[in-house]
Image: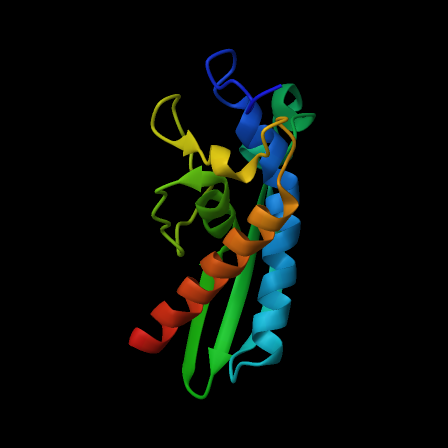
Length: 146
């Protein structure tokens, strides 16, 4: 089997990548923070439709936001971890690290990075690790430019 076929379902390859990419992102952030003068903390925020007051929507799953807060001396920043994860999963994705919500993509707006799959269509774990490392390094490089 070749790479997953985005023609059948354009979101299938991204769906296969999102959880392992997020796990590798968190691991790379942990490693980077260990050697950085930035201090980091995480926040998970669940937002339910209509604040859960409407019985028709109360059973719906919440949107889950993951934030990384960075602090160094008098600087305090936050990064939307979904944006970094999208940068890992998609080709040529330029994140908005302080985006307030979860990006709602339409088919064709983003392309799954198929180089993260091996020729048999399985996730190439080495490639995924390398890209997660690069994304985290680039994010920290932008911090030093501010």
